[in-house]
Image (cartoon, rainbow, N blue to C red; front, side, top):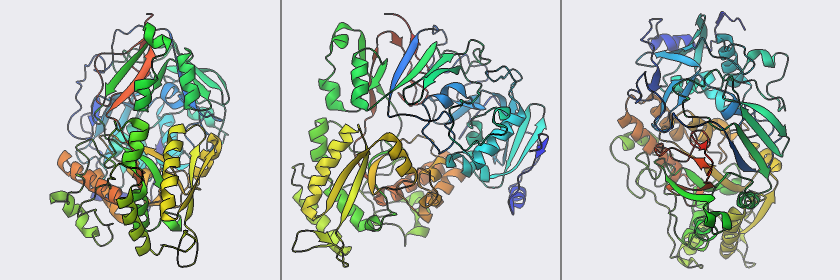
Length: 606
């Protein structure tokens, strides 16, 4: 690639750019950028509001991970990468403030420049930015990283790369990207791309899994690791960015280590023994009943409930609609009816956790369950009304059971829908289609997913009332990744955490390319022009009103599509941790999520 000027053109790309009115005139470079409006922090901010700028440095933090790893390259689909490589050792041009819905501030880049229509973005690198080996971070490194990730990296990087018409070096420390589509999020997306050292990868196949760690510019460097057992990072005393306001009060531990265990129960036992620093408890009943061990009673372990303001996201059992038995929405609705949420929730959680109502539930971006679309939501959905599943426009809400184990009312409704879809119960009590094929499927889980296994076992028993035979198959972590990457499953556990700033990643989650392209997050295999149109409307939205309407419309199509059997969510995190660890009083908007633990925590002996 020519390091002075690299032009990437596709078909009519430049014509589109010209029609969007892109020019070479510079706007005033800024210290930050927000998806809408202005970023909350001024150019002279001291630190992020959720960080303690006076936090002491030192100590160690150990976290337990379930499963294993066989690669140190987190940017490709091959292999399972060790935790922490990207977050701790590699930086991006801009950094995200998790106390705002979606705002970025200069990290490797000292400034960002774009126009009102966001037809281009230009970044200017900081002169002092350095990789951990002492070499400067250059425009060539930025350009190589963008192209490599966008072409041979994980598919999550590809969509944005295809929207770049030109990529050009405009100065010793500046690079400009001009776009071939209208997408207001693209400047922010590129600002969050990992920047790698080009020279490290010369003569190597970047797409392969490797045990050679990337050379990054982040606060930590890889210290030592044992494949599949642990990975340990040490704080780089020569880190170029330690005095940046954005970093002040962050990355305070001398060592961050991730130890791998067979399953979550093993991690919990290691935490009780003092070998893990903190543990997130997902089971509310266990939180109330199993935290009376000696270190809690002595005060050496602290229990905290940390609220958040982010959407519920989606978690549950996902249908692989690539499989013929799940292609009909009536079949999926029948299987949702057979899932006795109220009974399962009472059994496992004491009935204390609410059910996920929709993908963007628990936020202003979520649809109103059961209520018809109106106003701008309706206008966005109306062109697709002929192809939308029932409930998208009229209103859809998840079925509610009577709470008893039999769930008779919903089972009867499920049987009726299955019959409409061509499935009937024969004299042998087995549900079959017109060809005489029995309705059977497999629920795939990872060994150690004990809670989800309990959910699946109750569900499998309930399905027998419909003449359906479902089996539970628990496999190891490596097999599970291989099978889900290739979409080789019928039904499995599915979780997608969603933010208050959904954007291009939504295409990776449920864009049509994921129906056949391996390695995307579209495990359900959804192929919906309406979904892609709602995402496009989100990306083009000029203001928060239009953005909210488009997101709610997307929520309607996804939820009424009946692709997932949702379980429960919590509007707070239940976190137990060593009393030697501290975190700031000011909690970020997103709570205990990315950017919180271990980023803003510190060690202070009890």
